[in-house]
Length: 394
Length: 189
Image (cartoon, rainbow over all chains, first blue to last red; front, top):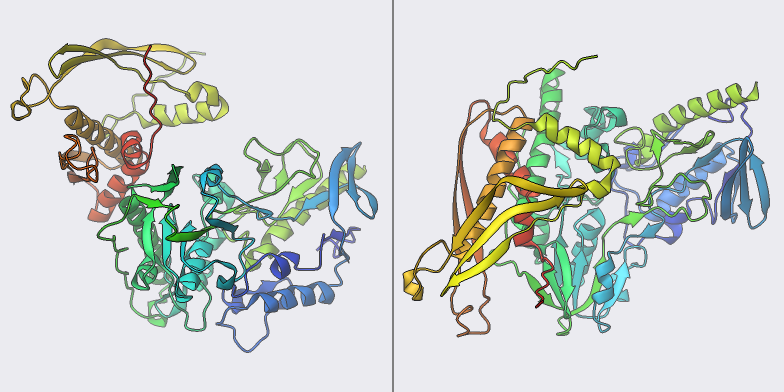
């Protein structure tokens, strides 16, 4: 889009194109979006399985081909060490030299480092700890029980995979987002896009801070289009406990508020399905789909322990599926808040003319961090950027 | 310019506009959001004590209730006590009930739901072998707390009401205190 406007630009990548998907994801990971939603400007998935979910190697190839097809001016193996404001522009320092520019778009995403809660320090030495950036496959972990902390998409997927490896798995469940994989015969993410939910703009959302912090929905991409919710996990033998609240004297303490988190997630899912049904009805499209259904409430375990002895040897490892955080140590412009997040308005960084961000949660729309969300956000950002360059050139 | 005071018709009597305004103001002044609640307690006789609540700290300064509130707390006669007041654990149930009920009213107001009646029945199951030191595997506190709400509202479906109650728990101080570990330091002056 910058090329279309003849705006001179360069894309800096610290590793290879699609680096994160090459280096920082686990072996069995597939996209949780169907391949038909792998769409970038003028480029789309053209494989044989539009309803399927690409493996990471395929994602890497997809993005690398896009870079090649569009002749994006990418400089690989070029890590940015600092960005500083310099007069009417910015100075970008890399290991291979400095770049002076009038505008910078931060596209490093929100997942640069694993967010592991401070209470990790109280885990007994005998228990191995892995973040989801470290995790590759079950063989990495010692034999024996695993405590997975966090019931996001990652937490749910890893709990499932580790359970299949024959281990005892305890999953500590905090706030989570429940979704069925298929609804009325279509992928649930097809509904998110078609109904317009994904297009909801950031300035139309009541509690934007909350929307930006929502955990990823409990989805997995499998050929069977399987639903991966807490009922599926508990049926497979994963033990559900409440949110990990504290570790005291080598004992993990879990919240007793699990029931309500189940209720909140079930209610939220039902409201979303109501939205889909209303959209289908309003558009007189009910005939295209199966009948509306509602799913079984999340089953509450009969006895959910409030604590787990981490020194007893029953639990040999902990996988922290507690989210990610962005890393802005290299950004020497005062635009990061006390929680480590960029201060921006729809991707326009505040108090830093010419500085933009893209690819952050609900940057401009609910679909901002999905492949299919890149195009509309990019168009908006480039439009603003071009306007800025025009104005400041005078 | 004189401010025109518009009396907004409140459905349930909760001034959510004021709460939302306070929320916005406190986002910009997080220090003012640091409150300290207080209670003082004087032993009377036997297991009977009297606690008082008046002052608290918040919005950057000392505050106080309009009047001082007093609570006589005791144990029942089957515990060989005088039964001058409710037990401490019943006071905890009262705390939970009132916190959740206030929350239901506030969330209902915010969502435009007009409540006709809200009643809650609470039960805290406890094996007293714990507090009597008979069995160290038995905890002192509640094994289970059950809250049953009966809510009648003018313009709300069953799902709406379930959502009200779920949201009330989500934002309840006492629910959090009871379901999650809380640091307690007991010193001797």
